[in-house]
Length: 168
Image 1 (cartoon, rainbow, N blue to C red):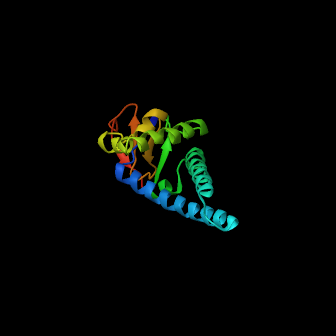
Image 2 (image 1 turned 60 degrees about the vertical axis):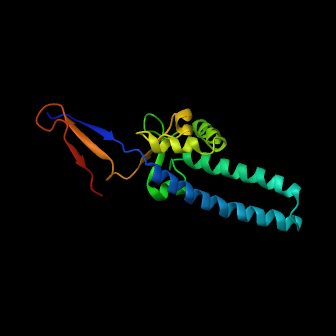
Image 3 (image 1 turned 90 degrees about the horizontal axis):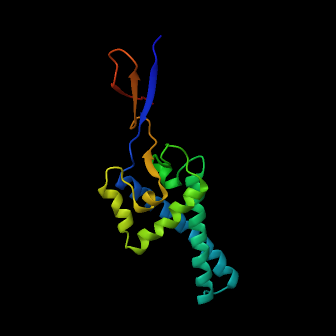
């Protein structure tokens, strides 16, 4: 009897992929903000300082819900990440919990207050982890099976350690 073990070798999402996905998500959130701003200012018929404080709070809640719900959902990614074929996982390459997604979102503020240095860290380490990934113990990986390799390790014989690529 031949016994095979399948071992997934994942490829971490690069800094460029992560940056482009953030731009896409930023664009989508901007559309949401525009609609929210339009509806609120139309309701009050004018724009005041009181409205602007409320709008900032509403926009923060919208961003919080957007990132935490999408990243902890079955998709494991925001629409921007889905468009680029990347997702957020835990150390077991499984879906992250809503609590971990909260920690990830909140820890992003460290990157904002340090003038984006927390984000730039991802460009200079092997597994492309930003400061919010390190704090929340998450990873951003490619979901494209062609880019990821499946290693077939045969318990005995000459296939030991050979790699194959999956075809779509």
